[in-house]
Image 1 (cartoon, each protein chain N blue to C red):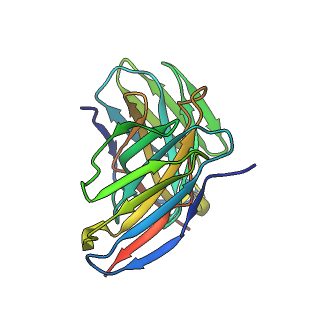
Image 2: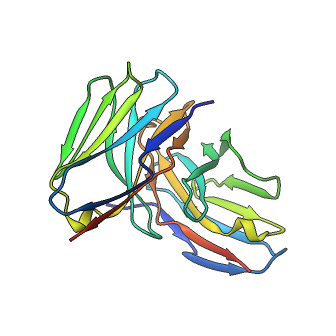
Image 3: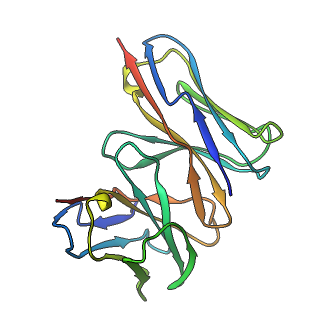
Length: 113
Length: 110
């Protein structure tokens, strides 16, 4: 079965640079979620989109922005990167009909040096 | 604000032993999730517990939910090395946001 796809899987950036993470949800899934997991931490909800509209927002820094496109893929844009942004970034997807089940992608490991 | 707390946070046990991970939460809503995470990997869904009294089992893992006590347990029976991982419980705050416990890092020694 198709799963959530994230790219790139690994990304190394320097401080103050910009990064873009991409997420391709499971086919026919209309809701996308982004989570950030720091080293040794639990995942923290950043933001979610339903039908291309922002549907919920968590502890996402102002330096980050995200959107969902017409093909339902989503991008997380991160600017002015800081060392503390180094983390695993997970995307998850679900359908409105079964919104209680989120399927997680493999994650993007971002390292800021 | 929903709080989800797990204990213990670290657990080292021997193969063949039984143990339980506890997950307490601060709301009275139903539905609780258990995930497994191997180092550097994604979150693997283990169980979705939808209502009070729900019990689910898969191999050596069994999860239960007591909404009145705001407690879920993940019981490990006759542990084997392959179960070494970090286990998270999680609940929804609102319709979209999953709130995770701190995670229990389980190490099973031969």
